[in-house]
Amino acid sequence: MRFLEAIDRKKLKPELVARYRDALRTALAGAVRVELAVEEDRVDKRIEQLAGLADSIDRQRMVQRLRVERAVARQEWESAVAGFRELARRFGTHRITQGVQDPVRVRLDRWVGGQLADLWPKLPEDLRARLDKQLAADASAVIGKERLQQRTFAEVFAFHPASRSVRFHLATVAARNGRVGEAEVTWLRLAEDADPAVGTRARKALVDFRSKRGLGGPARRADWPKEVEIVRAAGSSRSVRRQDLELNRQRLPWFDSHRTVYDSSRQRLIVERAEDGGVSWSVPLPQSGRSGTSMYLPARAVGHQVVVFHRGVVQALSPTTRELLWSHSLDAGLARSTSIRPRPPVLVPAETAATQLNLVVRNARRGPLRVVNREIICVSGRRRLTSLEPRTGEVLWQRDRVASGIPVMGSDKIFTWAVDQSGPRSRLPGSRSHWGRCRF
Image 1 (cartoon, one colour):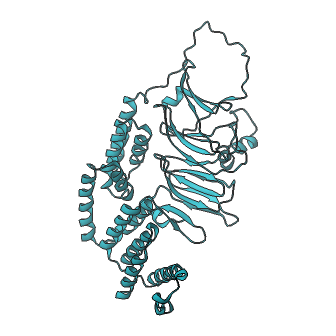
Image 2: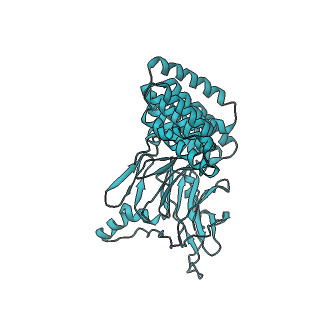
Image 3: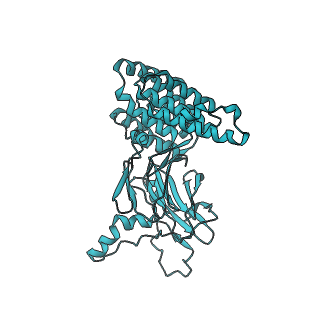
């Protein structure tokens, strides 16, 4: 810093000005981070100097983050909370890099939510009580504002009871507007709330919603007349294949009344009624230019939303409303997909059955769809793990330098994968505090 400050900027050649500013920014940021907790004016002056050099949105975000980190280091809790909220408001959709050896890019609003969840128990009681009242008032006010502001509040303060009313409101509006997947996922998350009353209310709302849409009744089976005789049918089954939809231990009678068929020659997913074989929906599946091929289509359900991977594209479909909800292109390389249709259950030796039930083997059948549940969709691409939001398909975080083909398993609470020879590493996607820590 001393050498840079000793330079007379007016005497610098024009071609050196940009290099000087870059070096000064790097030195100032390093000097501030070393003295975050120091109670001296020079640290604040350096932050303001950095703000004057912040000529891009990313550099402005860095300056705001330094201000927040300094407030936390000095235990200026009220300023820290206000700073975190400002970060989420201005840069919520940005992704920031966490870690050095295993860098992960995390969506900033989720990171802020995790930081606040960690910070809240440390607040003095009087300050926490005052902020609780403020959040309750903010929750009431945001319900009357735009949907984007409501979602931001619900994500940043998902750990706080004040966000429950906003999340219920978002689910109700989504249900009213026919967004089945969004409404179901929101209610499914609320159903796991620590407060039993909140969980009961969410489950009741979900049951009522499904009942009104005809999704909660008993499965409609095929009713064959007595005089029908089953004879051998001629035809080819090489291009049209029945799909085995994983319901993730969910009780969804609608899927018992329907079956999914993948037509690989026409690149379409067909939904048929089980009772009469009639086509309920036929939808073309988009694909990426650089993608592998597979005769089997990995498909998993989150509520009545079906998540599939087809030739380099992860997409969410709503067969009950006949909509493509979102899609995300994935660089999966040119190799053929390893996903295969599971063998039907038959009488086999115990050692063979054990192999078929092995979690790693079952995981390989799912192709790049590694973890799919109400909290997260984790997909693997070319040396990258990507986490998606089930309701919107937005990228929550990404981790690079992941070996291709490694086993990745998990639930809505935790998922684990192998990293070289150092053993498994875990990540808690369902816990907002771990979004903040970003631990692996």
